[in-house]
Length: 301
Length: 278
Image 1: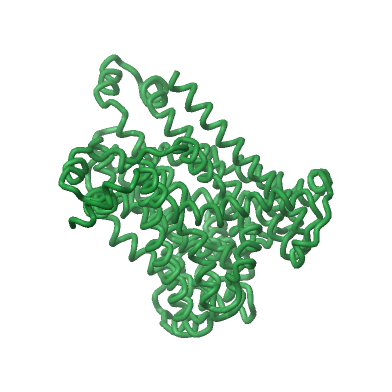
Image 2 (image 1 turned 60 degrees about the vertical axis):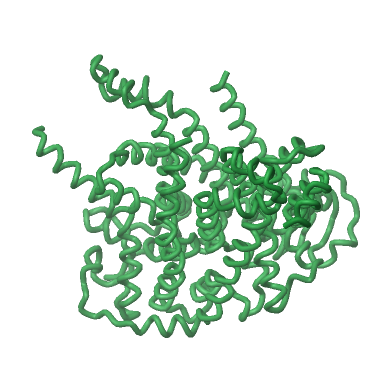
Protein backbone atom coordinates (compact mmCIF):
# COMPACT_ATOMS: atom_id res chain seq x y z
CA UNK A 1 0.00 0.00 0.00
CA UNK A 2 2.80 2.37 0.91
CA UNK A 3 4.57 1.65 -2.36
CA UNK A 4 1.40 2.30 -4.31
CA UNK A 5 1.05 5.68 -2.64
CA UNK A 6 4.55 6.74 -3.59
CA UNK A 7 4.08 5.73 -7.24
CA UNK A 8 0.72 7.40 -7.39
CA UNK A 9 2.23 10.66 -6.21
CA UNK A 10 5.26 10.52 -8.46
CA UNK A 11 3.50 9.69 -11.70
CA UNK A 12 2.28 12.88 -13.42
CA UNK A 13 -1.40 12.78 -14.24
CA UNK A 14 -0.71 13.03 -17.97
CA UNK A 15 1.17 9.74 -17.92
CA UNK A 16 -1.58 7.99 -15.98
CA UNK A 17 -4.16 9.35 -18.38
CA UNK A 18 -2.31 8.07 -21.43
CA UNK A 19 -1.84 4.72 -19.69
CA UNK A 20 -5.61 4.50 -19.19
CA UNK A 21 -6.29 5.57 -22.77
CA UNK A 22 -3.64 3.53 -24.57
CA UNK A 23 -5.37 0.13 -24.92
CA UNK A 24 -8.59 1.59 -26.34
CA UNK A 25 -6.78 4.09 -28.57
CA UNK A 26 -4.49 1.40 -30.02
CA UNK A 27 -7.46 -0.85 -30.83
CA UNK A 28 -9.58 1.99 -32.26
CA UNK A 29 -6.65 3.26 -34.29
CA UNK A 30 -5.79 -0.14 -35.68
CA UNK A 31 -9.29 -1.43 -36.41
CA UNK A 32 -11.36 1.71 -37.09
CA UNK A 33 -9.20 4.68 -38.04
CA UNK A 34 -6.53 2.86 -40.06
CA UNK A 35 -9.00 0.88 -42.24
CA UNK A 36 -10.91 4.12 -42.91
CA UNK A 37 -7.75 5.92 -44.02
CA UNK A 38 -6.72 2.96 -46.17
CA UNK A 39 -10.14 2.93 -47.85
CA UNK A 40 -9.69 6.64 -48.58
CA UNK A 41 -6.26 5.92 -50.09
CA UNK A 42 -7.43 2.91 -52.16
CA UNK A 43 -10.39 4.88 -53.49
CA UNK A 44 -7.91 6.85 -55.64
CA UNK A 45 -6.19 3.72 -56.99
CA UNK A 46 -6.90 0.62 -59.05
CA UNK A 47 -6.11 -1.69 -56.08
CA UNK A 48 -7.05 -5.35 -56.49
CA UNK A 49 -8.36 -7.40 -53.54
CA UNK A 50 -5.56 -9.97 -53.86
CA UNK A 51 -2.75 -7.49 -54.56
CA UNK A 52 -3.65 -4.26 -52.75
CA UNK A 53 0.01 -3.15 -52.73
CA UNK A 54 0.51 -3.11 -56.51
CA UNK A 55 -1.76 -0.22 -57.24
CA UNK A 56 -1.63 2.70 -59.63
CA UNK A 57 -3.17 6.04 -58.91
CA UNK A 58 -6.36 6.69 -60.82
CA UNK A 59 -7.11 10.10 -59.37
CA UNK A 60 -10.87 10.62 -59.08
CA UNK A 61 -11.63 8.02 -61.79
CA UNK A 62 -13.22 5.53 -59.35
CA UNK A 63 -15.65 8.17 -58.15
CA UNK A 64 -16.78 9.11 -61.68
CA UNK A 65 -17.03 5.41 -62.67
CA UNK A 66 -19.07 4.79 -59.52
CA UNK A 67 -21.48 7.67 -60.05
CA UNK A 68 -22.11 6.51 -63.63
CA UNK A 69 -22.38 2.80 -62.76
CA UNK A 70 -26.04 1.77 -63.16
CA UNK A 71 -25.60 -0.94 -60.51
CA UNK A 72 -24.33 1.59 -57.98
CA UNK A 73 -27.08 4.05 -58.87
CA UNK A 74 -29.68 1.35 -58.48
CA UNK A 75 -28.19 0.24 -55.13
CA UNK A 76 -28.21 3.84 -53.92
CA UNK A 77 -31.77 4.35 -55.12
CA UNK A 78 -32.93 1.09 -53.47
CA UNK A 79 -31.28 1.97 -50.16
CA UNK A 80 -32.70 5.51 -50.16
CA UNK A 81 -36.16 4.21 -51.05
CA UNK A 82 -35.92 1.59 -48.28
CA UNK A 83 -34.99 4.35 -45.81
CA UNK A 84 -37.86 6.53 -47.09
CA UNK A 85 -40.29 3.71 -46.37
CA UNK A 86 -38.87 2.57 -43.04
CA UNK A 87 -38.08 5.90 -41.34
CA UNK A 88 -41.51 7.63 -41.42
CA UNK A 89 -43.53 4.46 -40.85
CA UNK A 90 -41.35 3.15 -38.02
CA UNK A 91 -41.04 6.55 -36.33
CA UNK A 92 -44.78 7.27 -36.35
CA UNK A 93 -45.69 3.69 -35.42
CA UNK A 94 -43.25 3.47 -32.51
CA UNK A 95 -44.19 6.99 -31.35
CA UNK A 96 -47.84 6.01 -30.98
CA UNK A 97 -46.88 2.67 -29.43
CA UNK A 98 -44.90 4.59 -26.79
CA UNK A 99 -47.75 7.04 -26.08
CA UNK A 100 -50.11 4.10 -25.83
CA UNK A 101 -48.16 1.84 -23.45
CA UNK A 102 -46.82 4.69 -21.28
CA UNK A 103 -48.88 3.57 -18.27
CA UNK A 104 -47.70 2.15 -14.97
CA UNK A 105 -49.90 -0.98 -14.65
CA UNK A 106 -48.15 -4.38 -15.03
CA UNK A 107 -50.22 -5.25 -18.11
CA UNK A 108 -48.72 -2.34 -20.06
CA UNK A 109 -45.23 -3.13 -18.84
CA UNK A 110 -45.72 -6.69 -20.09
CA UNK A 111 -46.93 -5.30 -23.42
CA UNK A 112 -43.77 -3.17 -23.74
CA UNK A 113 -41.67 -6.31 -23.33
CA UNK A 114 -43.73 -8.06 -26.02
CA UNK A 115 -43.15 -5.21 -28.49
CA UNK A 116 -39.44 -5.40 -27.75
CA UNK A 117 -39.07 -9.15 -28.37
CA UNK A 118 -38.23 -8.91 -32.13
CA UNK A 119 -35.38 -6.52 -31.27
CA UNK A 120 -33.74 -9.21 -29.15
CA UNK A 121 -33.90 -11.89 -31.86
CA UNK A 122 -30.96 -11.51 -34.23
CA UNK A 123 -31.43 -10.12 -37.72
CA UNK A 124 -30.18 -13.11 -39.77
CA UNK A 125 -32.67 -15.37 -37.92
CA UNK A 126 -35.50 -12.94 -38.64
CA UNK A 127 -34.49 -12.48 -42.28
CA UNK A 128 -34.67 -16.26 -42.77
CA UNK A 129 -37.93 -16.53 -40.81
CA UNK A 130 -39.60 -13.79 -42.88
CA UNK A 131 -38.49 -15.42 -46.13
CA UNK A 132 -40.63 -18.38 -45.06
CA UNK A 133 -43.47 -16.09 -43.93
CA UNK A 134 -43.47 -14.44 -47.38
CA UNK A 135 -43.52 -17.83 -49.15
CA UNK A 136 -45.74 -17.62 -52.26
CA UNK A 137 -48.87 -19.71 -52.76
CA UNK A 138 -48.20 -23.18 -54.17
CA UNK A 139 -51.36 -25.24 -54.17
CA UNK A 140 -52.47 -25.70 -50.56
CA UNK A 141 -49.13 -24.46 -49.23
CA UNK A 142 -48.20 -20.85 -48.57
CA UNK A 143 -46.42 -18.60 -46.10
CA UNK A 144 -48.25 -17.05 -43.15
CA UNK A 145 -48.61 -13.63 -44.84
CA UNK A 146 -50.32 -15.10 -47.90
CA UNK A 147 -52.43 -17.34 -45.64
CA UNK A 148 -53.65 -14.19 -43.88
CA UNK A 149 -54.45 -12.15 -46.99
CA UNK A 150 -56.05 -15.03 -48.93
CA UNK A 151 -57.98 -15.81 -45.73
CA UNK A 152 -59.69 -12.41 -45.98
CA UNK A 153 -60.34 -12.91 -49.69
CA UNK A 154 -57.44 -11.02 -51.30
CA UNK A 155 -55.21 -12.62 -53.95
CA UNK A 156 -51.91 -14.15 -52.78
CA UNK A 157 -48.73 -12.28 -53.71
CA UNK A 158 -45.24 -13.41 -54.68
CA UNK A 159 -43.70 -10.80 -52.31
CA UNK A 160 -39.93 -11.31 -52.41
CA UNK A 161 -40.04 -12.48 -56.05
CA UNK A 162 -42.16 -9.55 -57.22
CA UNK A 163 -40.03 -6.63 -58.51
CA UNK A 164 -42.34 -3.96 -57.08
CA UNK A 165 -43.24 -5.69 -53.80
CA UNK A 166 -39.83 -7.07 -52.77
CA UNK A 167 -38.35 -3.87 -51.32
CA UNK A 168 -41.56 -2.86 -49.48
CA UNK A 169 -41.68 -6.42 -48.08
CA UNK A 170 -38.15 -5.99 -46.69
CA UNK A 171 -39.15 -2.59 -45.30
CA UNK A 172 -42.25 -4.02 -43.59
CA UNK A 173 -40.20 -6.75 -41.94
CA UNK A 174 -37.64 -4.17 -40.78
CA UNK A 175 -40.32 -1.95 -39.23
CA UNK A 176 -41.72 -4.95 -37.38
CA UNK A 177 -38.24 -5.82 -36.15
CA UNK A 178 -37.09 -2.36 -35.04
CA UNK A 179 -40.25 -0.61 -33.78
CA UNK A 180 -39.80 -1.90 -30.22
CA UNK A 181 -36.38 -0.31 -29.89
CA UNK A 182 -37.53 3.12 -31.09
CA UNK A 183 -40.52 2.78 -28.75
CA UNK A 184 -38.11 2.44 -25.81
CA UNK A 185 -36.31 5.64 -26.80
CA UNK A 186 -39.63 7.47 -27.06
CA UNK A 187 -40.70 6.06 -23.67
CA UNK A 188 -37.51 7.48 -22.15
CA UNK A 189 -38.30 10.83 -23.82
CA UNK A 190 -41.84 10.77 -22.44
CA UNK A 191 -40.41 10.79 -18.91
CA UNK A 192 -39.54 14.46 -19.55
CA UNK A 193 -43.12 15.24 -20.48
CA UNK A 194 -44.70 17.25 -17.71
CA UNK A 195 -47.85 15.44 -16.61
CA UNK A 196 -49.24 18.62 -15.01
CA UNK A 197 -48.92 20.64 -18.23
CA UNK A 198 -50.72 17.86 -20.06
CA UNK A 199 -53.46 17.75 -17.41
CA UNK A 200 -53.77 21.55 -17.49
CA UNK A 201 -54.19 21.44 -21.26
CA UNK A 202 -56.88 18.80 -20.85
CA UNK A 203 -58.74 20.92 -18.28
CA UNK A 204 -58.47 23.96 -20.57
CA UNK A 205 -60.40 21.91 -23.11
CA UNK A 206 -57.62 20.89 -25.49
CA UNK A 207 -58.66 17.82 -27.51
CA UNK A 208 -56.34 14.85 -28.10
CA UNK A 209 -55.01 16.33 -31.37
CA UNK A 210 -54.33 19.73 -29.80
CA UNK A 211 -52.58 18.14 -26.83
CA UNK A 212 -50.43 16.16 -29.27
CA UNK A 213 -49.62 19.21 -31.37
CA UNK A 214 -48.98 21.78 -28.63
CA UNK A 215 -47.83 19.80 -25.60
CA UNK A 216 -46.50 16.35 -26.50
CA UNK A 217 -44.70 16.96 -29.81
CA UNK A 218 -42.71 20.06 -28.69
CA UNK A 219 -41.42 18.32 -25.57
CA UNK A 220 -40.49 15.23 -27.60
CA UNK A 221 -38.61 17.08 -30.31
CA UNK A 222 -35.14 15.85 -29.31
CA UNK A 223 -36.25 12.22 -29.06
CA UNK A 224 -37.88 12.48 -32.48
CA UNK A 225 -34.76 13.97 -34.06
CA UNK A 226 -32.66 11.22 -32.49
CA UNK A 227 -34.97 8.40 -33.57
CA UNK A 228 -35.28 9.72 -37.14
CA UNK A 229 -31.50 10.05 -37.57
CA UNK A 230 -30.69 6.72 -35.91
CA UNK A 231 -33.30 4.90 -38.02
CA UNK A 232 -32.04 6.64 -41.15
CA UNK A 233 -28.45 5.56 -40.53
CA UNK A 234 -29.54 2.02 -39.58
CA UNK A 235 -31.59 1.79 -42.79
CA UNK A 236 -28.57 2.77 -44.86
CA UNK A 237 -26.66 -0.15 -43.29
CA UNK A 238 -29.12 -2.59 -44.89
CA UNK A 239 -27.36 -5.85 -45.78
CA UNK A 240 -28.52 -9.10 -44.09
CA UNK A 241 -32.13 -8.82 -45.34
CA UNK A 242 -31.42 -8.53 -49.10
CA UNK A 243 -28.42 -10.86 -48.88
CA UNK A 244 -30.47 -13.66 -47.29
CA UNK A 245 -34.03 -12.94 -48.43
CA UNK A 246 -33.67 -11.92 -52.08
CA UNK A 247 -29.98 -12.08 -53.01
CA UNK A 248 -30.45 -8.49 -54.21
CA UNK A 249 -33.12 -9.52 -56.73
CA UNK A 250 -35.48 -9.55 -58.49
CA UNK A 251 -33.69 -7.56 -61.22
CA UNK A 252 -31.43 -5.98 -58.60
CA UNK A 253 -34.45 -4.21 -57.13
CA UNK A 254 -33.40 -4.90 -53.53
CA UNK A 255 -29.59 -4.72 -53.82
CA UNK A 256 -28.36 -2.36 -51.08
CA UNK A 257 -25.34 -0.05 -51.01
CA UNK A 258 -23.47 -2.31 -48.57
CA UNK A 259 -24.27 -5.30 -50.74
CA UNK A 260 -22.87 -3.43 -53.77
CA UNK A 261 -19.64 -2.70 -51.86
CA UNK A 262 -19.44 -6.33 -50.69
CA UNK A 263 -19.94 -7.74 -54.20
CA UNK A 264 -17.56 -5.26 -55.81
CA UNK A 265 -14.88 -6.36 -53.35
CA UNK A 266 -15.33 -10.11 -53.15
CA UNK A 267 -16.79 -10.96 -56.57
CA UNK A 268 -15.19 -8.33 -58.83
CA UNK A 269 -12.10 -7.98 -56.57
CA UNK A 270 -12.17 -4.28 -57.44
CA UNK A 271 -10.91 -2.87 -54.14
CA UNK A 272 -10.41 0.62 -55.60
CA UNK A 273 -14.00 0.99 -56.75
CA UNK A 274 -15.38 -0.62 -53.57
CA UNK A 275 -13.31 1.78 -51.46
CA UNK A 276 -14.77 4.74 -53.34
CA UNK A 277 -18.17 3.29 -52.40
CA UNK A 278 -17.08 3.05 -48.75
CA UNK A 279 -15.97 6.69 -48.72
CA UNK A 280 -19.17 7.92 -50.39
CA UNK A 281 -21.15 5.91 -47.86
CA UNK A 282 -19.26 7.50 -44.96
CA UNK A 283 -19.97 10.94 -46.45
CA UNK A 284 -23.68 10.14 -46.50
CA UNK A 285 -23.62 8.97 -42.87
CA UNK A 286 -21.55 12.00 -41.80
CA UNK A 287 -23.98 14.31 -43.59
CA UNK A 288 -26.99 12.71 -41.88
CA UNK A 289 -25.30 12.99 -38.48
CA UNK A 290 -24.45 16.63 -39.12
CA UNK A 291 -28.10 17.32 -39.99
CA UNK A 292 -29.10 15.80 -36.65
CA UNK A 293 -26.62 18.00 -34.77
CA UNK A 294 -27.88 21.10 -36.55
CA UNK A 295 -31.51 20.22 -35.89
CA UNK A 296 -30.66 19.59 -32.23
CA UNK A 297 -28.77 22.92 -31.95
CA UNK A 298 -31.64 24.89 -33.40
CA UNK A 299 -33.82 23.41 -30.71
CA UNK A 300 -31.49 24.57 -27.91
CA UNK A 301 -31.10 28.18 -29.11
CA UNK B 1 -68.86 4.44 -25.79
CA UNK B 2 -69.22 3.41 -22.16
CA UNK B 3 -66.21 3.22 -19.88
CA UNK B 4 -66.34 -0.59 -19.83
CA UNK B 5 -66.70 -0.76 -23.62
CA UNK B 6 -63.72 1.52 -24.06
CA UNK B 7 -61.64 -0.65 -21.77
CA UNK B 8 -62.69 -3.79 -23.65
CA UNK B 9 -61.75 -2.16 -26.98
CA UNK B 10 -58.36 -1.26 -25.50
CA UNK B 11 -57.78 -4.86 -24.45
CA UNK B 12 -58.73 -6.22 -27.85
CA UNK B 13 -56.58 -3.67 -29.70
CA UNK B 14 -53.55 -4.32 -27.48
CA UNK B 15 -54.04 -8.07 -27.90
CA UNK B 16 -54.04 -7.70 -31.68
CA UNK B 17 -50.88 -5.55 -31.68
CA UNK B 18 -49.19 -8.02 -29.33
CA UNK B 19 -50.15 -10.80 -31.73
CA UNK B 20 -48.67 -8.78 -34.63
CA UNK B 21 -45.31 -8.75 -32.86
CA UNK B 22 -45.40 -12.30 -31.54
CA UNK B 23 -47.15 -14.38 -34.21
CA UNK B 24 -44.14 -14.68 -36.56
CA UNK B 25 -42.03 -15.96 -33.66
CA UNK B 26 -44.78 -18.29 -32.42
CA UNK B 27 -45.04 -19.62 -35.98
CA UNK B 28 -41.26 -20.14 -36.04
CA UNK B 29 -41.26 -22.22 -32.84
CA UNK B 30 -44.38 -24.18 -33.82
CA UNK B 31 -43.23 -24.92 -37.38
CA UNK B 32 -39.81 -26.03 -36.11
CA UNK B 33 -41.60 -29.01 -34.52
CA UNK B 34 -43.55 -29.96 -37.66
CA UNK B 35 -42.53 -32.59 -40.21
CA UNK B 36 -40.99 -31.25 -43.40
CA UNK B 37 -44.05 -31.75 -45.63
CA UNK B 38 -46.37 -30.03 -43.13
CA UNK B 39 -44.39 -26.80 -42.46
CA UNK B 40 -46.70 -24.63 -44.59
CA UNK B 41 -49.83 -26.73 -44.07
CA UNK B 42 -53.16 -25.62 -42.66
CA UNK B 43 -53.20 -21.97 -43.77
CA UNK B 44 -53.43 -19.22 -41.20
CA UNK B 45 -54.69 -21.50 -38.43
CA UNK B 46 -52.07 -24.17 -39.08
CA UNK B 47 -50.30 -22.74 -36.05
CA UNK B 48 -53.10 -24.19 -33.90
CA UNK B 49 -52.55 -27.71 -35.24
CA UNK B 50 -50.67 -29.70 -32.61
CA UNK B 51 -51.39 -33.16 -34.06
CA UNK B 52 -48.14 -33.92 -35.88
CA UNK B 53 -45.44 -32.24 -33.81
CA UNK B 54 -42.11 -33.99 -33.28
CA UNK B 55 -38.63 -32.99 -32.10
CA UNK B 56 -36.68 -34.66 -34.92
CA UNK B 57 -35.71 -31.38 -36.60
CA UNK B 58 -33.61 -30.36 -33.62
CA UNK B 59 -30.97 -33.12 -33.52
CA UNK B 60 -30.76 -32.99 -37.35
CA UNK B 61 -30.26 -29.21 -37.36
CA UNK B 62 -27.76 -29.41 -34.51
CA UNK B 63 -25.71 -31.98 -36.43
CA UNK B 64 -25.97 -30.46 -39.92
CA UNK B 65 -25.07 -26.91 -38.83
CA UNK B 66 -22.40 -28.11 -36.34
CA UNK B 67 -24.30 -26.06 -33.77
CA UNK B 68 -22.24 -27.28 -30.82
CA UNK B 69 -19.02 -25.92 -32.25
CA UNK B 70 -20.75 -22.82 -33.64
CA UNK B 71 -22.14 -22.06 -30.16
CA UNK B 72 -18.63 -22.27 -28.70
CA UNK B 73 -17.34 -19.86 -31.39
CA UNK B 74 -20.18 -17.37 -30.90
CA UNK B 75 -20.12 -17.51 -27.10
CA UNK B 76 -16.33 -17.09 -27.07
CA UNK B 77 -16.71 -14.10 -29.38
CA UNK B 78 -19.33 -12.48 -27.13
CA UNK B 79 -17.34 -13.21 -23.96
CA UNK B 80 -14.11 -11.88 -25.52
CA UNK B 81 -15.67 -8.67 -26.75
CA UNK B 82 -17.37 -8.07 -23.39
CA UNK B 83 -14.35 -8.99 -21.29
CA UNK B 84 -11.72 -7.00 -23.18
CA UNK B 85 -14.22 -4.28 -24.10
CA UNK B 86 -15.40 -3.56 -20.56
CA UNK B 87 -11.82 -3.11 -19.39
CA UNK B 88 -10.38 -0.96 -22.20
CA UNK B 89 -13.51 1.14 -22.73
CA UNK B 90 -14.06 1.90 -19.05
CA UNK B 91 -10.35 2.75 -18.59
CA UNK B 92 -10.51 5.25 -21.46
CA UNK B 93 -13.88 6.58 -20.29
CA UNK B 94 -12.49 7.14 -16.80
CA UNK B 95 -9.51 9.07 -18.19
CA UNK B 96 -11.83 11.29 -20.25
CA UNK B 97 -14.14 11.83 -17.26
CA UNK B 98 -11.68 12.46 -14.46
CA UNK B 99 -8.20 13.37 -15.72
CA UNK B 100 -6.63 16.45 -17.23
CA UNK B 101 -4.11 16.11 -20.02
CA UNK B 102 -3.03 17.98 -23.10
CA UNK B 103 -5.16 17.28 -26.18
CA UNK B 104 -8.06 15.84 -24.19
CA UNK B 105 -10.84 17.73 -25.95
CA UNK B 106 -9.78 17.14 -29.57
CA UNK B 107 -9.08 13.49 -28.75
CA UNK B 108 -12.53 13.06 -27.23
CA UNK B 109 -14.10 14.78 -30.26
CA UNK B 110 -12.27 12.26 -32.48
CA UNK B 111 -13.60 9.34 -30.43
CA UNK B 112 -17.15 10.72 -30.66
CA UNK B 113 -16.73 11.11 -34.44
CA UNK B 114 -15.77 7.42 -34.68
CA UNK B 115 -19.20 6.44 -33.30
CA UNK B 116 -20.80 6.92 -36.71
CA UNK B 117 -18.45 4.55 -38.58
CA UNK B 118 -20.57 1.42 -39.06
CA UNK B 119 -18.92 -2.00 -39.17
CA UNK B 120 -20.93 -3.02 -42.24
CA UNK B 121 -19.22 -0.44 -44.39
CA UNK B 122 -15.78 -0.78 -42.81
CA UNK B 123 -15.86 -4.57 -43.22
CA UNK B 124 -14.01 -4.44 -46.55
CA UNK B 125 -10.94 -2.39 -45.51
CA UNK B 126 -11.06 -4.08 -42.08
CA UNK B 127 -10.76 -7.46 -43.77
CA UNK B 128 -7.46 -6.41 -45.41
CA UNK B 129 -6.14 -5.13 -42.07
CA UNK B 130 -7.11 -8.43 -40.42
CA UNK B 131 -5.38 -10.31 -43.25
CA UNK B 132 -2.20 -8.23 -42.85
CA UNK B 133 -2.22 -8.99 -39.12
CA UNK B 134 -2.56 -12.71 -39.78
CA UNK B 135 -6.08 -12.83 -38.32
CA UNK B 136 -7.50 -15.15 -40.99
CA UNK B 137 -7.61 -18.90 -41.54
CA UNK B 138 -7.59 -21.24 -38.54
CA UNK B 139 -9.56 -21.14 -35.31
CA UNK B 140 -7.27 -18.96 -33.17
CA UNK B 141 -6.69 -16.24 -35.80
CA UNK B 142 -10.40 -16.19 -36.68
CA UNK B 143 -11.33 -15.76 -33.02
CA UNK B 144 -8.93 -12.81 -32.96
CA UNK B 145 -10.65 -11.34 -36.03
CA UNK B 146 -14.09 -11.86 -34.44
CA UNK B 147 -13.12 -10.23 -31.14
CA UNK B 148 -10.31 -7.66 -31.39
CA UNK B 149 -11.83 -5.16 -33.87
CA UNK B 150 -14.97 -4.80 -31.72
CA UNK B 151 -13.55 -4.72 -28.18
CA UNK B 152 -12.79 -0.99 -28.14
CA UNK B 153 -16.01 0.82 -29.01
CA UNK B 154 -16.30 4.60 -29.35
CA UNK B 155 -19.95 4.60 -28.28
CA UNK B 156 -19.23 2.57 -25.13
CA UNK B 157 -16.42 4.97 -24.17
CA UNK B 158 -18.79 7.90 -24.64
CA UNK B 159 -21.62 6.19 -22.74
CA UNK B 160 -19.46 5.10 -19.78
CA UNK B 161 -17.84 8.54 -19.57
CA UNK B 162 -21.30 10.08 -19.11
CA UNK B 163 -21.92 7.72 -16.21
CA UNK B 164 -18.52 8.37 -14.59
CA UNK B 165 -19.21 12.12 -14.85
CA UNK B 166 -22.52 11.69 -13.03
CA UNK B 167 -20.82 10.12 -9.98
CA UNK B 168 -20.26 12.43 -7.01
CA UNK B 169 -16.55 13.35 -6.65
CA UNK B 170 -16.45 13.08 -2.84
CA UNK B 171 -15.87 9.33 -2.60
CA UNK B 172 -12.99 9.37 -5.08
CA UNK B 173 -11.43 12.43 -3.43
CA UNK B 174 -11.60 10.80 -0.02
CA UNK B 175 -9.83 7.72 -1.40
CA UNK B 176 -7.15 9.94 -2.95
CA UNK B 177 -6.53 11.67 0.38
CA UNK B 178 -6.19 8.19 1.91
CA UNK B 179 -3.40 7.57 -0.60
CA UNK B 180 -5.10 5.21 -3.06
CA UNK B 181 -3.61 5.13 -6.57
CA UNK B 182 -5.64 6.31 -9.54
CA UNK B 183 -6.06 2.75 -10.78
CA UNK B 184 -7.29 1.61 -7.36
CA UNK B 185 -9.84 4.43 -7.24
CA UNK B 186 -11.03 3.53 -10.73
CA UNK B 187 -11.16 -0.20 -10.00
CA UNK B 188 -12.51 -0.28 -6.44
CA UNK B 189 -14.74 2.80 -6.34
CA UNK B 190 -15.71 4.23 -9.72
CA UNK B 191 -16.25 1.00 -11.66
CA UNK B 192 -18.54 -0.70 -9.09
CA UNK B 193 -20.60 2.52 -8.86
CA UNK B 194 -21.61 2.40 -12.51
CA UNK B 195 -22.65 -1.26 -12.51
CA UNK B 196 -26.06 -0.63 -14.17
CA UNK B 197 -24.32 1.19 -17.03
CA UNK B 198 -21.91 -1.74 -17.40
CA UNK B 199 -24.89 -4.13 -17.55
CA UNK B 200 -26.44 -1.98 -20.28
CA UNK B 201 -23.21 -2.06 -22.27
CA UNK B 202 -23.01 -5.84 -21.90
CA UNK B 203 -26.57 -6.36 -23.13
CA UNK B 204 -26.10 -3.98 -26.08
CA UNK B 205 -22.86 -5.74 -27.03
CA UNK B 206 -24.49 -9.18 -26.82
CA UNK B 207 -27.47 -8.06 -28.93
CA UNK B 208 -25.18 -6.41 -31.50
CA UNK B 209 -22.62 -9.15 -31.91
CA UNK B 210 -24.95 -12.11 -31.67
CA UNK B 211 -26.51 -10.63 -34.85
CA UNK B 212 -23.14 -10.05 -36.55
CA UNK B 213 -23.46 -11.23 -40.11
CA UNK B 214 -21.36 -9.53 -42.77
CA UNK B 215 -18.13 -9.73 -40.75
CA UNK B 216 -18.26 -13.48 -39.90
CA UNK B 217 -19.42 -14.04 -43.48
CA UNK B 218 -16.07 -12.58 -44.56
CA UNK B 219 -13.69 -14.00 -41.94
CA UNK B 220 -15.19 -17.40 -41.02
CA UNK B 221 -13.92 -19.10 -44.14
CA UNK B 222 -13.61 -22.62 -42.72
CA UNK B 223 -16.43 -24.81 -41.57
CA UNK B 224 -15.03 -25.23 -38.06
CA UNK B 225 -14.78 -21.46 -37.48
CA UNK B 226 -18.42 -20.63 -38.35
CA UNK B 227 -20.51 -18.63 -35.90
CA UNK B 228 -24.09 -19.63 -35.09
CA UNK B 229 -25.56 -17.17 -37.63
CA UNK B 230 -23.28 -18.37 -40.41
CA UNK B 231 -24.11 -22.02 -39.59
CA UNK B 232 -27.80 -21.13 -39.81
CA UNK B 233 -27.33 -19.15 -43.04
CA UNK B 234 -25.53 -22.11 -44.60
CA UNK B 235 -28.47 -24.42 -43.83
CA UNK B 236 -30.61 -21.83 -45.58
CA UNK B 237 -28.48 -21.46 -48.72
CA UNK B 238 -26.82 -24.86 -49.25
CA UNK B 239 -28.89 -27.78 -50.55
CA UNK B 240 -30.58 -29.94 -49.47
CA UNK B 241 -32.93 -27.20 -48.20
CA UNK B 242 -34.88 -28.59 -45.24
CA UNK B 243 -37.18 -25.94 -43.77
CA UNK B 244 -37.67 -27.93 -40.57
CA UNK B 245 -33.93 -27.98 -39.96
CA UNK B 246 -33.61 -24.28 -40.78
CA UNK B 247 -36.39 -23.37 -38.33
CA UNK B 248 -34.98 -25.58 -35.58
CA UNK B 249 -31.55 -23.99 -36.06
CA UNK B 250 -33.19 -20.54 -35.96
CA UNK B 251 -34.79 -21.37 -32.60
CA UNK B 252 -31.48 -22.74 -31.28
CA UNK B 253 -29.68 -19.58 -32.45
CA UNK B 254 -32.24 -17.43 -30.62
CA UNK B 255 -32.27 -19.16 -27.22
CA UNK B 256 -28.92 -17.87 -25.81
CA UNK B 257 -29.65 -14.22 -26.52
CA UNK B 258 -33.17 -14.45 -25.07
CA UNK B 259 -31.66 -16.03 -21.96
CA UNK B 260 -29.04 -13.26 -21.60
CA UNK B 261 -31.74 -10.64 -22.05
CA UNK B 262 -33.98 -12.24 -19.40
CA UNK B 263 -31.08 -12.36 -16.92
CA UNK B 264 -29.96 -8.79 -17.58
CA UNK B 265 -33.39 -7.19 -17.78
CA UNK B 266 -33.51 -6.46 -14.05
CA UNK B 267 -30.20 -4.62 -14.15
CA UNK B 268 -31.22 -2.73 -17.28
CA UNK B 269 -34.37 -1.54 -15.52
CA UNK B 270 -32.20 -0.43 -12.63
CA UNK B 271 -30.13 1.61 -15.07
CA UNK B 272 -33.25 3.25 -16.47
CA UNK B 273 -34.47 4.31 -13.05
CA UNK B 274 -30.95 5.54 -12.36
CA UNK B 275 -31.17 7.83 -15.39
CA UNK B 276 -34.47 9.08 -14.00
CA UNK B 277 -32.87 10.19 -10.74
CA UNK B 278 -30.28 12.39 -12.42
